[in-house]
Length: 241
Image 1 (cartoon, rainbow, N blue to C red):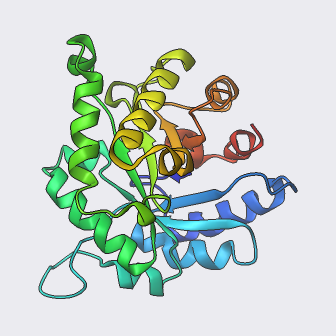
Image 2 (cartoon, rainbow, N blue to C red; image 1 turned 90 degrees about the horizontal axis):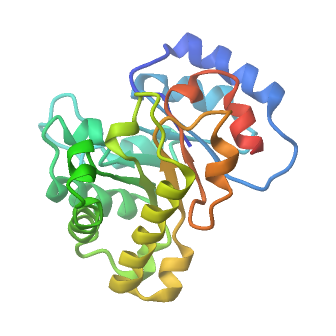
């Protein structure tokens, strides 16, 4: 899954879509998602129609409609052709978004038929303090409030160590695996073994064409949430990996 953040215009999205179509591998062994700014979504849907690339949004609001200037609802995204939505990204959390907000967004996204990509992760200070697992466990428990087990398999969880996002620092494959394994253990404790096995867990945090193979080879890392490296056609190399 790509997270373009605040990059690319609709025109650039159209060009990127044409480039990506040319280099997409023929095999269908993984799902590919491009999460993009809302203004680019119509261009992305059009550029990648009839491919196996799904279009995702980078955020949404939990109300269906109303006096919420500047917000976008889940039904609006669905009507535009969106299949996935990133929720709880650390950059949104840094703007004041709480786990309570994220929980309401998760519920709204699932009700609308979207697949949420839920982001969790620790800061450098939290990692140094040895509370990585406590912090992520708290995020997951709050974010999953009132989510029934049968809905869980529709949620993708992305582990993004905040200290590795856009910094060029990457968690080692062993560090990333340890936390992703811990995330699955928390889900197992809440929901049981079968739902925990069914959840896809992604690693995000400066994954690129050079380091992706080692990360993706780990048993509890099912894919990646790619930032900067998803803005170039090199993204196709990560898909291949």
